[in-house]
Image (cartoon, rainbow, N blue to C red; front, side, top):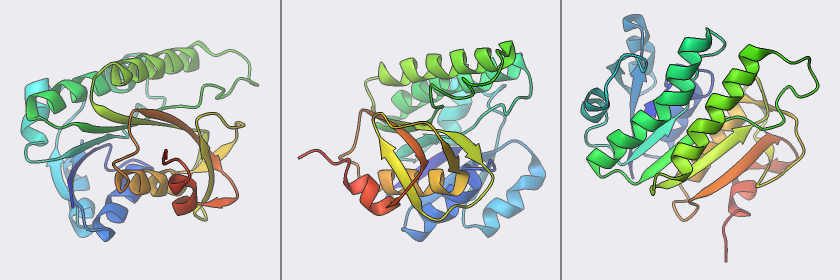
Length: 218
C-alpha cells in the first residue's frame, strides 16, 4: 500500500478521507494548521504534521511529504478572504506539485470545483475570484506531467452521504455530500490506472465502487 500526504486533513473532506485510507491499508500523513488539531488526527490513525499552506515554502512541503508516494490536495480557503483564496486554492496546488517533483512523487489528486457552481445566483466577485483560482490550479495540475486526477464536486453538503454518486467527465450539476467526495477519492487512489482525468461528482444512484470501476478504460 501507499503512503499518502493529505493536504487539508482537518477539512470537511480531508477528515473523512484520512480514516478511509487507513481502513484500506494506506499510511496517511495529515497536514494541519492548528496545534490543537493534532490529537484528533492521531486518534484517526493519521500522522499529524503542523504547517500552514499559506506560509510554507516548497522546501517546507518537501520536508513534510518526505517518504510519501501520493499527494492529495483537498485544502481550501472556505470563503475566508480573497488573499487566502489566492494563496490556498490558487497557489497551493502549484507549490505541492513542485514538492512532488522534488520528491519523485508521481501521483497527485486535487479536489477542485464544478464549473457550474452557483451559476443560478447573483454574480459575486468573491466567488468569481474563487472559481478563477480553482481553474488556475486545475491548469497547473493538468500541465504538471504527473499522474494526476482532478475531482470537481458539486455543491458540498456537510453530510457523510450514503455512498451513492454520479461520477463522470461531464454530468448534470447538483449537490454532493463531503463523505461521498472522500469515498470517491479513496476509491480512485486504489485504482492507479485511472490517471490524467477530470471527473465531475454529485450525489446519485450508483455505489461508489461501481461508479469508479466504470471509469476504467479498456
